[in-house]
Length: 557
Figure: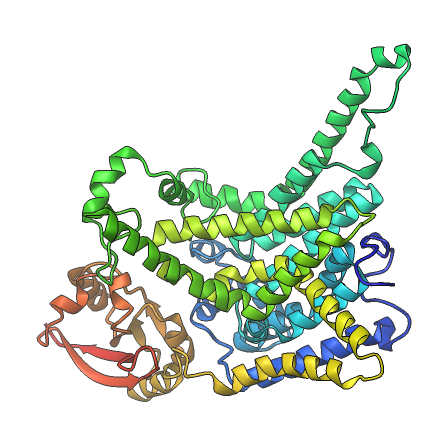
């Protein structure tokens, strides 16, 4: 098949799974087999560079432990959705530790997502672009990192990709069951991260606006008078059919997500889609209410910078603030999506302008819509919390949406190189080797991540306490490794001290640079008569040479 000439010709409506052919081992094509092996090798290297237990990982482990003990109400009281802790709790039946269970689940999903990526890219651009998209996923630095840490990003991408693949397959085959299944997969993604709802909404919009190819009615063709009288009936049926299709993914999503939404809405007293991200604050940030304008003048962020939306004294200072916010926003965007995907994605988007595709472009339209939707969500999140809140992982879903375009750009590059050097294979090998060298070099040159001192600190705490330590901290990773009981570190200085004494805490542990996020006045009011600094664990980095984890002991009142 010539690249890009017949997208959808080998589309995702095939009865077999994407990448499942009879020419390779276990029925998997040789191309996908080699890509899977490459992905596994890179993630094996990443295991030597990254701690599988990230800061949020330990929170999921706490939830999984509560679920295993049947304490569901306590587990659901956390701000995080419950599906990932449930998977960890089920995996621990083997039995394995929460750390190994979580990292194994993440790795499996990070590899399995290659198959729906192949199907999506094949539907949008053709077979060669599908191989290019799978290859770029295998070597993507963020995918490599998040594939070895016990976090929800890779499982979320898998269910989102599966929903996208099933949603497009529903159009190819004209079967509502696939549209409903896409909604179910979107609901599973939502129970991992709130962004999972995006697919159900996008598919509903696609089905309502675009419809199936077979439902097209040629308005320009001549009609007999008898047919003109009955014109309204076919259109009424068409509208009804599209309405049913639009509702199908929403129904599938609601079947999976509604029990959790009902629970957290009853807990908060209002309709709530996410406990971690407030929908109302998001809307207020995008469209600020007049009564918020005056109040925002005095609001500041922990670092001392005015909060988003705060008025400025002059237009010049306002422009300066906007430029600073845009700069802070683009850093995680570029790092998360990666220049490699951005370059090949733009190249792929440019090359399709000359394509005369048989497919009406539904896959491409859906991907572009999802890119715009997720980008708008992140802009709103940055407006409500500040651009510094965003990290590269927040843009991880945009990698999935951009990969088919990037795969098309990579396939076009290799096709062009093969045509230019017909008798030489080494230029293609050099291009692919250079791309593989990107994540390898990144892994080799990465600096120290925050959290490397947590394990030594946990070992020190265990050596100081007989029995179960009680630690007041917001670093769940510390209490996980110390096998300690965690007491939340938040509120005012007096509240934290009272809570510590009430729970007979042994230590208070925190990162000084992060503490203002949960207790604005703690550091300024810290007194030697209340707390004694007993240990410091430095974590210097290029950006924060003074970064450290400190441990205090309560003095007797």
